[in-house]
Length: 335
View 1 (cartoon, helix red, strand yellow):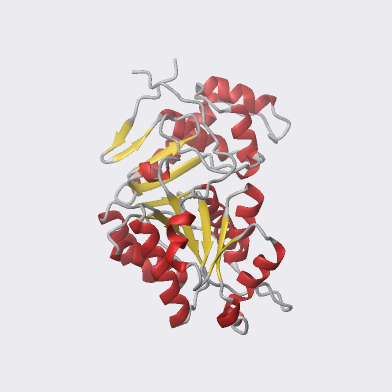
View 2 (cartoon, rainbow, N blue to C red):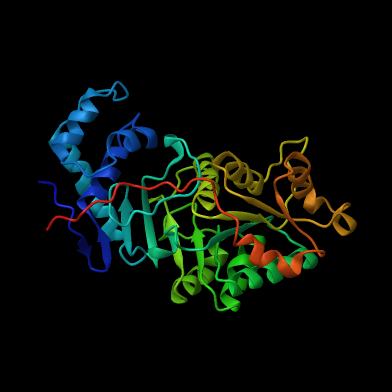
């Protein structure tokens, strides 16, 4: 019988299932899609090893002993990070949060490290993602703050990526409005990025918010870190009922791109409602709104916030819902 009873490393909570999922993911060729398909519910180590050895994706055969060695190494890494992590949840756990939207298996989260109130990721939470560029001007910041304050007043939990600029404005205004906020990080919880926002991360947790990450260790290269930012962008869409773009540049001729464009693209692909702040009479010549303008021109279903509807926009945004909310199998903990 597989024990899924919660274990504690001091304050850290995890199940054997979560460690099993993490260990499985360390095998080369085994990705999120394989885990989602083969391990939707907890399985014993011997069962997992049997499935791995039957997979054409595994380069060489493994053993239960090797699998358990991987688990031991992972538990050691968790111990070293215990001051920064409250727990780990994985697919198959009772409290693993269901994502929103229509998502292919290769992009579904399979485990999450967290610090703070994990219940903020439940589908009952009125999560609204707010994203944008790194260098907003005063006008962009003022409009964003007003909208975030209104959404918090209407019960929203603000989700963002803790980046400088519009992300910081979103988190800060949520806190200033006595609301709650979720920060999704591109690195481990014991190495918060950007370093300038480590104080803000602490404030988020102290004010009943949440920090989450898919990573236990830091990226080994700039290329790996860049990929993690993209992975972070998808989670902003997956754990929100809608996503709001404050302002952002569009991709240009010399290859400069925008993380906001990626996040809004994920939202479109996942059927997560998209919201764009834009006023044609005021913002038409401001390049910091190029992506906003582009999205509006490409998709007539996007909800546009302007000075003409800003008084009612906050409450209307909270009425937007994704087409599908994924439900994970409910597991009963066995003592």
